[in-house]
Amino acid sequence: MLTMLNPGGNAPEAPYSHGALATNVTRTLYISGQVGVDAAGRMGADIGEQAQIAVANLNAVLAEAGMTPANLAKVTIYLTDDSLIPGFMQAAGGGLPSPPPATTLLVVKALAAPPLLVEIEAIAVD
Image 1 (cartoon, rainbow, N blue to C red):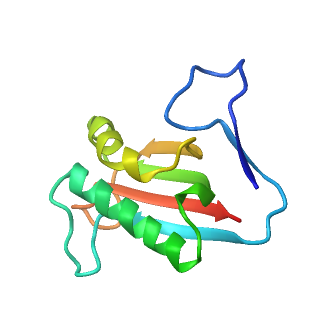
Image 2: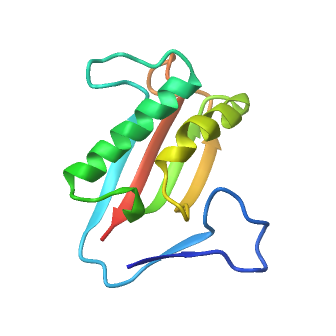
């Protein structure tokens, strides 16, 4: 069972949970960074497309393990520029569960290939 935690004394509510408590867990899935490149090798043209593809790739790994986005305990998002945050949130928001998992968003200098704008890694439990 996965319970999202948001203590009243922490920062105001945001599109993430401050903690995720997993109890009676039988399986843990560690998902490598998923990027905005589809199965045909096509990279999304902008942050919106790359975010949607990265979330779809993440969901495909979850499905392969018999899980759904509701199983996500922790998500780490890497963006290459802080100006991409609004576009990422708009494009990817619908693909993540509610309540949202514990989440960290980092702005990094670059990802593995220069045209990549976003990478998402995650931990899921059931």
